[in-house]
Length: 128
Image 1 (cartoon, rainbow, N blue to C red):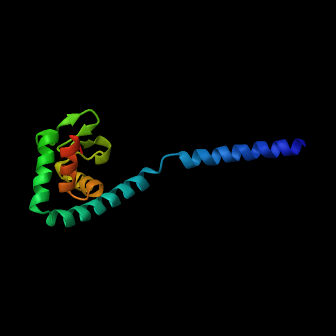
Image 2: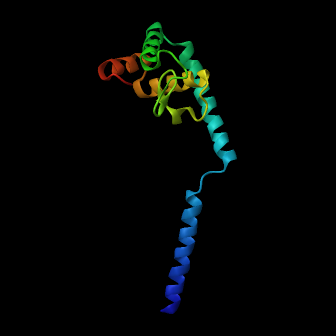
Image 3: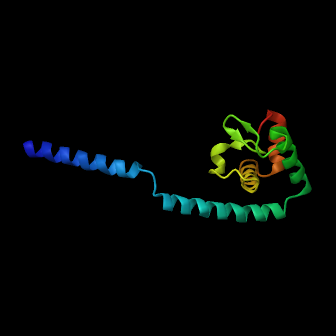
């Protein structure tokens, strides 16, 4: 009976230790490599969509930028930042104009299918 309690205690400690290791943040090198890989993917995706952006999508993108920030890359409003007023976290620490453009294109295309879709949502809700 005593050995069962000892076994359960040891097993509990091992399980707790394994859970702590699992919850620790990733190695920075690994996290940075994954971030760079995501940026490369977004850049390729952006170039493909940017080169094919229709006049209607370009106009819708300008519309949203003017309504959200007056076209300013440094506009700030609580947890939102930049020309398109996206979540600060979405920029992954890179607030450059080029990254704001990439991030905004990715956001509009993934959430609304296009900038025209984002504008239509904005018109009916006052935000996008």
